[in-house]
Length: 369
Ligand code: GN1
Ligand code: MG
Image 1 (cartoon, rainbow, N blue to C red):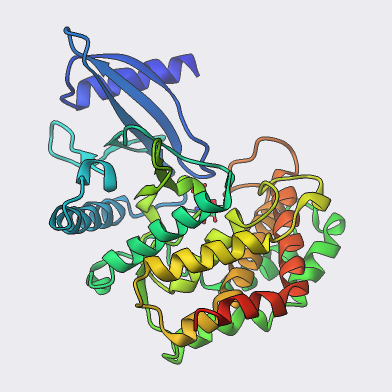
Image 2: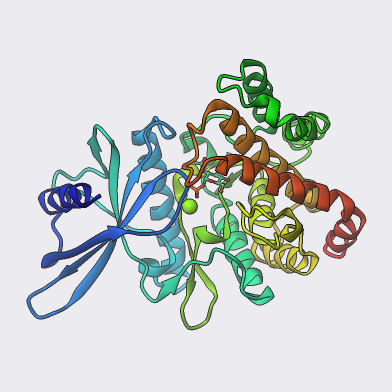
């Protein structure tokens, strides 16, 4: 690690024009795909500025030009809207720092590096600390959706094709089960069966999109609670981060992924499944906030399908974790043996709990129809 940090310090100093001297570079955040570092610079008169350096995983994100093109254009679009509304674009959207060669990333053998300014006086949460915090995050993700509602979706690069295509995620799991490259299948038959029994469900959103019953929108596609910065004072969600998966998709993906992560009573990798359930108070708060944030743009059919969005994004994520466990943990970072299996189990437990609470979830959503 020491050596890597030194190499990264040298790279940052060589490639970027930053104010003052680089005084600190250290690991930051805990995404499952990219590596993130905090960079601090200090001028002679003691003024500090902070940046976020990221190594974008090039096994996952193969089209870095397309990815950065999306990020640069989407943030420029958001910046204009934020300015027009009298907001502060430096805090309300990401700002990419170009290199001395005016490029938006640095290509190295171990991955592609890019630098953002750090959003000051803000933090991100791993778990909702209060119902209100979760509601605030919903408004922010809904706002993001609304602000991008007139962005030309066809200009976006599809950075990961079929990212939330639950049907193809199901097919990937089936293939991983058949190939069983690590010989782990025999220990996870119960989890495999859980997913296989739900094959028909996997089609619901894909079919609704394909048949034009719900619209294709510009979506974030990774709306975990920790992908939003909350203001230290007001605790309101101010900036949506992690824009690597912004692509055309369904609003139900964004809504559902937030419920999956944030309305769970336990962590995504909790080993004690008794601690995992879908908290209906959080579910309702998020539903209300997201619909409000979207500012009336969601259609009746989208709202009606919200419980299904929550269930399918959870099932899909569980299938992705289980697939990765069967394939030998090649996609998501793991921090202990069986980590992806633990993650898959929490997701499936949540799905089962949502199914048990289906009527209540539908009744909550109905209030907003
Ligand atoms: C990954 O990078 P991170 O941790 O924000 C993943 C999401 C999953 C999530 C599960 C590009 O997000 O799709 O839902 O882990 N991102 C990618 O926690 O695959
Ligand atoms: Mg993230």
